[in-house]
Length: 327
Image 1: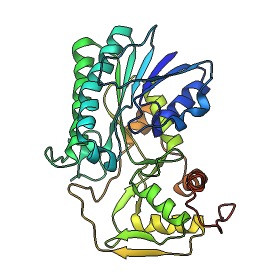
Image 2 (image 1 turned 135 degrees about the horizontal axis):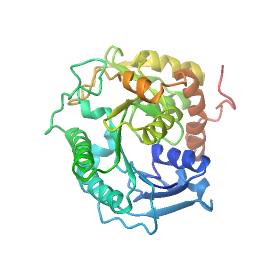
Image 3 (image 1 turned 135 degrees about the vertical axis):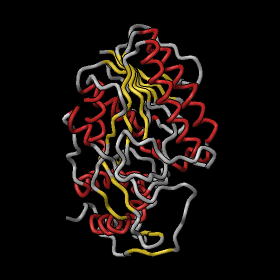
């Protein structure tokens, strides 16, 4: 197959490039590098079946030759990004999705939209099944991302129903792994960086807020299965096992050998920030035969060396940094 991945230089997009190339396909990665980075795909430059196109998908998209599938992953995806880039986030969710769908129509390609658990907002239903419509504040600061993705889902379904386009929608829950940005702002990179610097991990409030973490390889497997399935409605892909923030902090400290412990600060209540987030993956299990395989401890072990390498490159690690991750 010949596959276009928008946002192909991002965290998830670059891992998808790796997977489809490994499976024998031809891959075109498209990215304007607003939040993606060439470092994520540097190892692919020169590969005979890989092409990179620097382009902003909010503008008309041109790709020469046939396409069999388009995976639309172009978008800022972390709060630190979409709060700083609200207009760009809305434009890529609306104009970018519209352009990518138009290209899929022109090429007769199957289209897969990267949506998000954020479409559920601050959920009143727990865990969240695909049938839940969500609890979203459309005019709050997070609304630029939530509503961009909700619109993207709506226009994708409209193209499916009105034009008969083959579409798939994946709702992605918290995902971590190598190639996450140091400045991502989310709990996984924050905690790992603090631990590697031998700083106490910052926990706000009582630390009982919960998150569900899935390793990048599990997400990629779920996306591939969904792309090649016959399912046309949205599907949750995430890890249903919940951890409290304090439990996660303790795990990171143990795996990095960080002696600095945890520092507790007053609760930091961010507008519309969900206190719980857990996917119901019954549908993925039933339709795709998919469920996460990588335990959190194993996934964090695989992720720590990447962050260590990045911090060492920036000269931000203490001299006594150990050579290996403790077991």
